[in-house]
Amino acid sequence: MGDRTLTTLEGRSAARPTPPPTPAPLVEGRPDRPAEHRTAWQRLRAPRHPRIWFEILLIAASYGVYSLIRNAVPEQKAQALRNADWIWRAEESLGLAFEKTVNHAVDSVSWLIVTMNYYYATLHFVVTIGVLVWLYRWHPGRYAAIRMVLFSTTAVALLGYYLYPLAPPRLMESQNFIDTVLVHQTWGSMASGDLKHMSNQYAAMPSMHIGWSLWCGLAVFALAKAPWARILGLLYPVATLVVIVATANHFWMDALGGILCLAFGIGLVCAWYGSPPHRLPRYVTAAPPAEAERPPPEAERPVAAAERPVAAAPAAGAVQAP
Image (cartoon, rainbow, N blue to C red; front, side):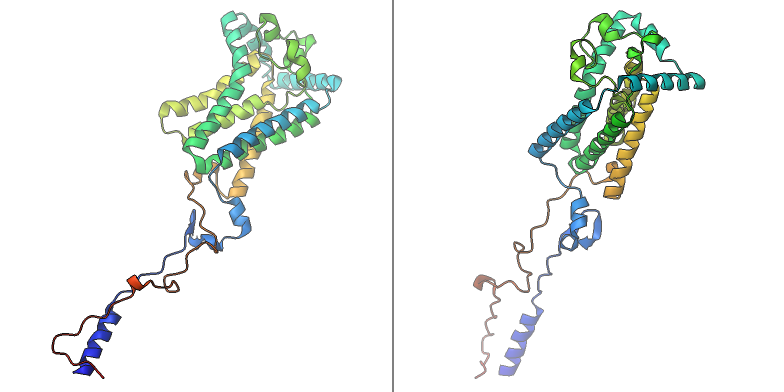
């Protein structure tokens, strides 16, 4: 009888299911690799949730450094004008020297050219900041990668300003281009009027108006869901190209330089993250706790008294083993 009772109790105890071990958190996008097994290199490249204070400081400091370096490039007027003449002759040889025709045609419509002057002066910054805010709010997992594209594009543009000084068409006195900001006395160009001493006038190649506007347009087109937003994303860089040509601030070949800079930025980020930015996860999960803070596995965790199994009471009439 006693042996039978002990066997029954042991069977009940053995039949009690043990909770499965808690699985380790997995790497985002890599379900076969736990987070704690990532190398330092993988952790550095992994998407992470942006922090608003860091982003504000980073953008402000980066733009300050960009402006400082851009304006510190020597204003090589003679070389810049020679390069502008070469660009103009190259476009004429291709049959695509249309900047002067567009410049004179749009300048004849006062309200249109004034609108373009303000477009050139403001939207370059307003739209870019707006897209950054939109990405931060609605696509935090992709924000850092897409922001890195913008920063890389701008950084390589600085190299172009140093190596290839270029005068904008409006400064080519021999070609009779119209400086629309001066003629219509609108605020707009950092290289015209009272603001010309605050900016390098011979840093037209590449055009960051095109580089930044195309960055904005591609980001909106790739990530927005509303069809009207995606259409506006495509139209924005096209409208910017018309504006920079009509106001005689850039040749269309400057726009090509901006596109090449953006292509460099996209390629660099794809190599860094191993994926196009828009294909990264939209949201990033919180980082797993450190090993020292992670609770011990179920098998090693001390069991509280309240959680310990209680032996079932013997049936009536059962004889306890001595």
